[in-house]
Length: 263
Image (cartoon, rainbow, N blue to C red; front, side):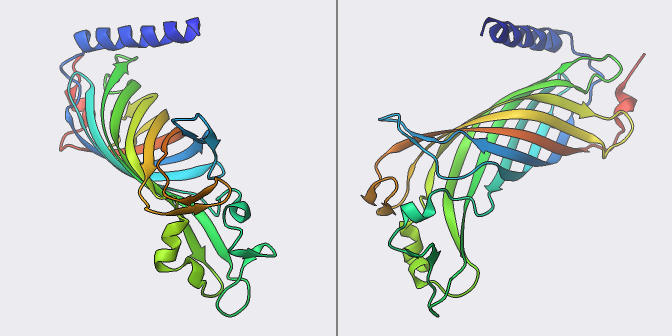
């Protein structure tokens, strides 16, 4: 714990020193980025009781678009929109919906297995502020990248019928089981920001990101026998998310980066 605190303090000091001594020949521009991430959830926690409720299996994927503005002193303002989803990863589905399952399957309108898959899907919109801590004089536009952000998130379970119609999961009926939640999200990110001196298309951020989702149910009626719900869900939830993330950036500038350097 002491070593972690020392590392964080050292990074903060480096950021302050970097801001005070940043060269004026660094690049100032907008960038557009496309990010890809592998997400891991440690489970939802009910805020009032501390009880843990795991809805989905790990990992699941995140795809998003970033728009950022990089200042000459290597401060960065950004906003990003993300979509995240898993692959048939709902946990304890038969225990959650025992009235829909028979012999391990959901029976469709034709009397056979409807081939129902259930996976999580979500979105988030996050605004952020960050700092690039330069580590090489040969490329003052690259370095350790620290950022903090806040925004909004919404998530739910999607039931996808593969084989034949399943009226019990169609229309308003699906809303009883989808656990739609929304609320604020906080974000902390540490990684490496790289901007090439020569190639406009070779610019990226490789990072480790933490998110905290503070959500509540949006549905008037929720059915989940595993969690003991058959009515309104008034709980508040806290969900930590961890992500390994790669962002591929494109600077929107008419000048090559190296034209800003003087030796």
